[in-house]
Length: 354
Image (cartoon, rainbow, N blue to C red; front, side, top):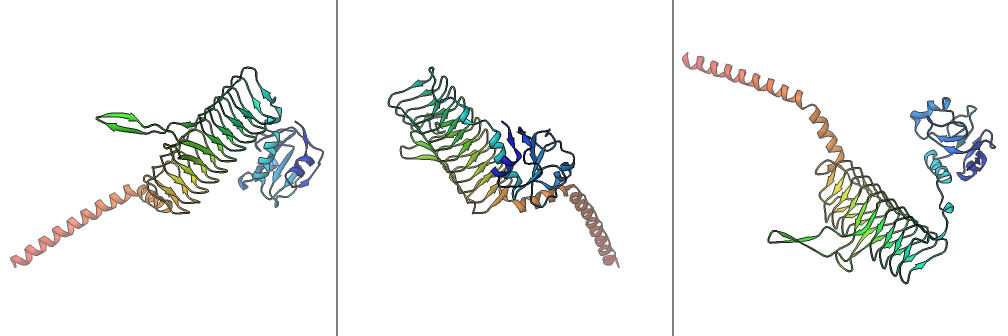
């Protein structure tokens, strides 16, 4: 793909400084960029790289002076660069529409227009697939599942029966939607499986990273729900009956236990977790390697295990770094107190003798 700088500037509503006919064939980081590539600066610590980069043009903030290298000034350079990345990214329009001859299609399947069902995909009975959706090779879609419009399902995704997937959803390779929840009744030292017969609902504009699993709810009318706009990283476990609100961000290796609820715009950092049956309020952040073990009010910032107020945890950690010196000072004080007590005892004995 080749785009002129003027075309890119128009796309991102930028102020163009320099030759608008400059041809751009790709995008790259400011240190790695080469001729005919576009880069960006969103962090002030990279401003010095503007003079050194080999990029043919740079997306910058509105206060960056023109130095001869073509610039596109915008209010938010990072978001503008994301738009350009989308422009140069792999497009579904390159996918051949239709059903590959090796795909297996069940009975009473409804497939919309401009849908791509690729090699060795399996689609069960009574499935509905919306317009513009791509089903990559070796995808499994169980019976009675509904998938919305313009959804992208990468290879080796498993979507179990009776699951609902919204529009513009992205499921990366290895994702499993609708696996059984972890439920067992222990009797006489044996574990008896509790059937998991609920469903999973993934709303519009959700993205789920590679090898992430979302368990189905336990009961017939129950649902594990991931609401609109939420983004999940790779290697995340979402247990049965969990409800995740809109526009949440959950990083890799996070685990959310059964029946926990995350309100809107909650952030779970890497390797964090939440125990079951708790509620994490809207706009809260659980920092990396932390575990939420109780309900959190809206706007909470917590860290540690168990997770507590983040500012307090930072003070505790700062105090712990001073612990060796504090112990040494305490030992010195103990020694001085012992010496004072010994001197007082000696003075008392002299007083008694006199």
